Length: 361
Image 1 (cartoon, rainbow, N blue to C red):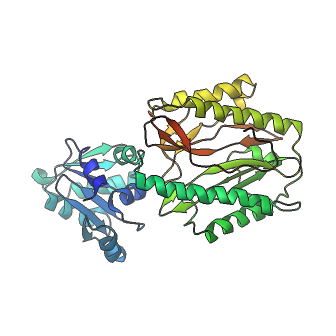
Image 2 (cartoon, rainbow, N blue to C red):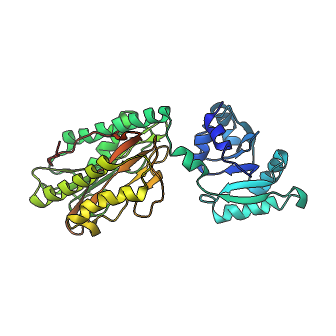
Image 3 (cartoon, rainbow, N blue to C red):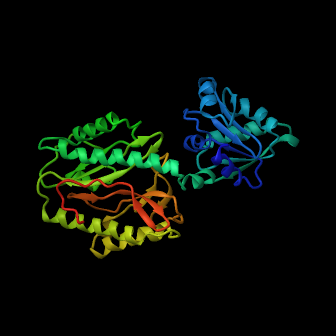
């Protein structure tokens, strides 16, 4: 029996059926890894609707679901299927369905006679909140992905040399990860050096990495769909005093969060703990993003750790802690690690040391 499916059914409340359209949510509930399709879930029925390309794949990957072959847009298949399910109150994922798709869904519903016409209800976060608490099996896969990311960071020591460009270093790291059997990378690797490091999501360029400057490396791996995410700020040669000082501030901000994080804390409160360290050092305005984000089948998912987050941190959540300082024209420093929140506090899942900047024990 699909335990995820059963947990989801407890959340249906007054809804007869929920239409799952978002790809990762669909995969989480069904096991189906194809790129298109819809899951329709009621208390008694579980249907996976796919086009002809995916019928056999869906049958193999989703044994708990009845696989139905569909063709075309909502108006062409939704009325008959929803009628067969006898559903009057149908939920849909309002956070993910485009306006165009929603209009097609409304048009499809109106094709049924008034007495059989379903009422459409927007839902938000039904699956995402389930996904935020990881099972032991999920944690093992995330740990494997984290080990790959650690190894890639350590590999940097072997390939970082004078004259190497950001793009070259990024490519070597990607090749390393793929050769270590990572699936498709969760995101494009970031290698940002010198002034480019002032951009939190800088694209890797043809810029040559120079001695003594900050180099921000942000990468991740993927194992059976589950992602990892790690950032280290390194240096080729000896770091200057400014880099050493700013690095130590960011490191202290992360350490403060690690020491104080607890089950039941809000995502906004967690962010503020790290923010205060950076602000007290005079760089509050230079830390403009959130402290972290959940990670699992997506590289960014619930919970959010940021100034406006209302997420409550719970046992079994996996998320990043990534404080940073970014200074226009100079560069930036970010340190990102993944943690599993346990009842006793956060447990680090990433452990790689950086290169060229002294890290406190």
